[in-house]
Length: 381
Image 1 (tube, helix red, strand yellow):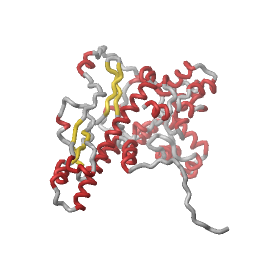
Image 2 (spheres, one colour; image 1 turned 180 degrees about the vertical axis):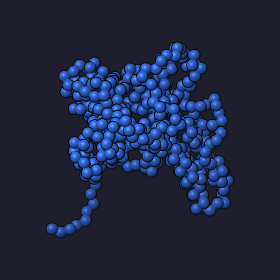
Image 3 (spheres, one colour; image 1 turned 45 degrees about the vertical axis):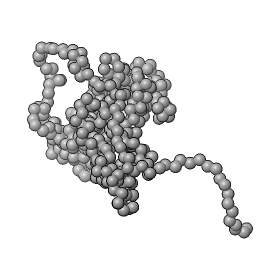
Image 4 (cartoon, one colour; image 1 turned 90 degrees about the vertical axis):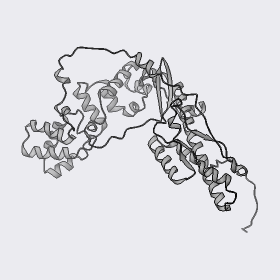
């Protein structure tokens, strides 16, 4: 078969993403901490971008998103201007009215029940770690030296979540102990506080906590033991079908699980620094109406460098390479600012859509969460 060259026309559809679109998508996917790092990195990399320190001094516009800039055209490089736009979509919160609506309830002091009495560890400056807390309880367990060694090995192999990371066989081999002795020590530690400690996984931990509450054979235990994936997705219909129970019973069992149990019993004793989640948007109910507020606190507000704009405007004697460098940097800065604006607008619209679709969830709680897919939100906004 002879080879030949020929021209062919082919019609096809494909998505071509410009660098600006890629940048906008990348910024949209960042969480707040990552966005702050990205802003600082761009400020350091692009000299045509600078922080606008004057906007922060305008208390009458606390909900301002950022400054916007006019489009940059190659044949109008000298006409770089900047304009500031205020978002009217975000309602200012009247905290004075909110405080006036607060109804304080007063009560007289009363004796604290023994079960609710604070731990002695609540009165020291730094709470002990999980190992110290468990060892303090094991001292009163009347263990012999061999059992104590096994207990120390078990406690030493609990991770920060309170889960046992080694198998019974490994403990037997390391401590030269029998299976009965190892299982007895594990059960002894599981009877200590916090409930659910020394479990192998989340399921076992939750079941141990329910057993401590006297709910070993409850519907909540059945859901955790046999239908945990359905619990994670709040699939009430599937849970009703699988358990043969009414929806009200399912909701009550799930409320028990979410309010009385913790999936990670050892986490409160972790000595690691807690990384707090900072939201991009707040939803608050004021006077019966849900208000959306974008969180711009502590994020630098950006603008085009006036110095670089003047250089490009007045620098007719600049070399071609220098003018091209200034033009490219200013255009990149403009696109970066526009990408930040687009991110804020998208987050606001998505939150508006979520409020519309999941109004009952915000009003009445997790039991009223409805199935929702990305396509529904995308079509809505």
